[in-house]
Length: 333
Image (cartoon, rainbow, N blue to C red; front, side, top):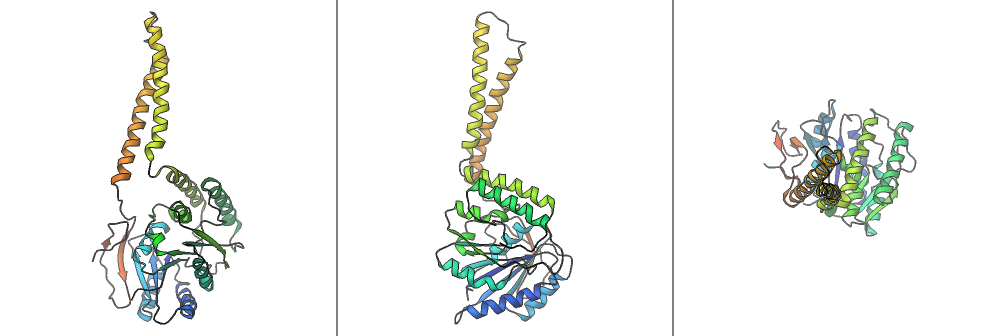
């Protein structure tokens, strides 16, 4: 039976929280499900080194709703989410962090917001229980996102979100693009909403946040800004640069040609080298744009992760290694 709700929870070294999180989700969801409705919970292991996987195995033996995707190693949160999205079958898909800072009691409020006509609802941790070293960079980052993309979310990077399934079918995650899912969905003309959610202090483990993460986020923000404007027309970007270089090169060479026609030597002029360089680089940039157009037209891409094991309630643990070949996330049997 197709579940009404799917939950995708990526984790890395969160053994102390997974059981309690499962119980909280189950208690909240069952209170709101109608007759015959079900849900599923996909835990995605992103290279844990503690007892997290063993904990999920125990949960699977106890609860048919729980499933495990164990990745081959640490591929990052975007890849882990993409793997979970590929398996999720629910009409509505939730994502939340495994550290218990997100409160499952907010789930009904997300569903109510979706019923207002939104396609994606993002949480907003108005009061954050995190150290200032994490809060301040987040605020700066969100301000930059709002400025560059025009999307008016307070917290674009909040991990607690609810999606209609159609949204995920039209998104492709790689690198660290999970931060920009609302931006990418907004660009696809989906309706984006936001609700204030309660945020708890971390009780177990350590935050995976670091300064390098902020820098990578800025680089990905530039990538998203480029994609929003030129994903389907890269030749417009490269073509503009290439044409300007060609025009500058032709102007310089035309000027030198006039001087040469008047009998002046131009062979040792640095301006000649500049003119030729502008023309050559301009042609190369234009060619790059055409190649990019060809890649956009033909490229399908591959999934940015490898699944080591897929474990469900009725299956036996297996050490089989499975390569995921498509961005749609279909796992060959």
